[in-house]
Image 1 (cartoon, rainbow, N blue to C red):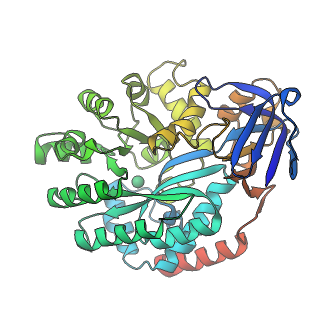
Image 2 (tube, rainbow, N blue to C red):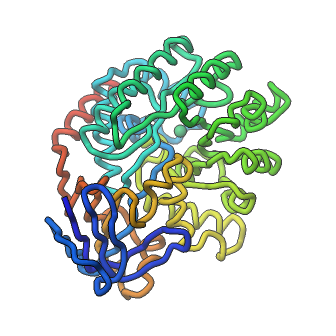
Image 3 (tube, helix red, strand yellow):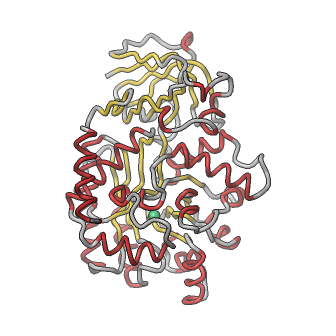
Amino acid sequence: MNTCISNGFIITADKTCSTMNGCVHVTDDIITYVGAEKDSPAFAAYKTIDVNGGIISPGFVNTHTHIPMNLFRGFANDLALMDWLENAIWPAEERLTGDDVYWGSMLGMAELIAGGVTCFNDMYNFMSDTLRAANETGIRGVIGATIIDFGKSIDERLAEADDLFAQLADNERVNAAIAPHSEYTVSDDSYAKLLKSAEKHNCRIHVHVSETKGEHEGCIERNGITPIARLNSLGVLDLPTMAAHCVWVSDSDMEIMADKNVGVMSCPQSNLKIGSGIARVSKMIDSGITVSCATDGAGSNNNLSMMEEMTLLAMLQKGSNYDPKLIPAKTALQIATINGAKVIGQDDIIGSLEVGKQADIIVLDTTGPRYCPSANLLNHMVYSGNDSDVVLTMVAGEVLYENGEFNRLDINEVMSKADSSAKKLLG
Ligand SMILES: [Zn+2]
C-alpha cells in the first residue's frame, strides 16, 4: 500500500539530522521519498495523510524495557533497587502467568505506540507471551531471552531461548537477543553457556551494567574488577553487547566499552527514581561510545515516554556538567532514534527517515500552544513537547495508531485485563 505523508516539517535524524518542509512517500513498508513537495516524483498514493504542518519524525527506539512490568506500575515505589527487587518485585513475579505477561505486554505496547515508539528492546520472562503481544500490536522489537541464576537452571533457560529463536524464524518485525540479567546474578559457568548460545544464534547480548553504586562496588569487592572489566574478561564484550544504565562505569571502563563497541542504553528517569545517580552520558559520547536512551520498565519509571526520556537526558547532562551546550536538541533526538537503532544493530533499516529504510514514522501535531511560535520545531519537540502530541504511529508502512485510535487493539479491553492481572498479583 502506498501512503503519502504530506505537508509536514520533516526531521530526518540522518547523519546531519537535516530538517525540511515536505512530504514522505511510503511504498508498502519502505520509505521511497523524503523531501520538498515540489521536487517529489509522481506517486499514486492509496492514502494521503495531510499533517497540517506537523512534525514527521522517525519513531523512537526504546532500547531498554521490561514491557510486562506495566502491571507493576505504582507498586512498591520509593524503595532502593535491591529492596524493591528482592522484597517486592521478585516475590510478585513468582505468581505471574503467561496470560498476565501477555496483558501487561499489550498494555505496555499500547503505551509505547501512543507515545511514538516504533521499536523496543525488551528483557523479561515468558518471552513467548511478549512475542504474542508484539505480533498482535504490530510494533517492532527485540525480545531478550532472560538468563538469571534464579528459579530455573541455565539449561532450561537456554532451551527457552532456543524455542524463542525458533518462533521468530520468519518474523519480519521481531527478533531476539540473549539477555543475562547482570554481572551479579549470572555465574561464570552460565556466562560460558549463554555465550555459546548467542554465538549459535548470531545475536546480541543485552545486560544491566553498573546501575547502582552498590552493584558496581560489590563487583569490585568480589572480583577485584568492575562489572565491565569482568564482562570483558568473561568474553561477553567480544559479542555485540547492549549495556543498560552504565551509571557508575569508570573512565577505564569507558575505554573498554569504546574499544569493544559496547552500545549503551541510558535510562535517566529510572536512575533518578531509584536514586541510582546520573550516567556520564556526555563523557561516554566523547569517548566514542554510542549512547541511546530508554525508559526501563514502568515499575521503576513509571511511564514509557521517550519524549520525557530524551528531554531529561539532555537536561541532566547540561545541569550536572554546568554546560548548556551539551546534548543539543538535535543530539537528543538522534539519541532517541538513530542511536537506538545502532545499539540494537538495525541502523541499516530503521532509526532515520531515509530512502530505502523501513517506514517506521511518527507524526506530531504542532497546532497547539506548546509549538508556538512555529519556528524551531525540532527544539519544541525536544524541550516543549510530550507524548500527547503524537497523532500517528506507523511501523513498516502500517498505521498502528492515528488520532487517538489504535488500529489493531481494543484499548479498553487491554486496560481492563491488565488491571485484573495486576489486582490478582498485587492484591
Ligand atoms: Zn532494566
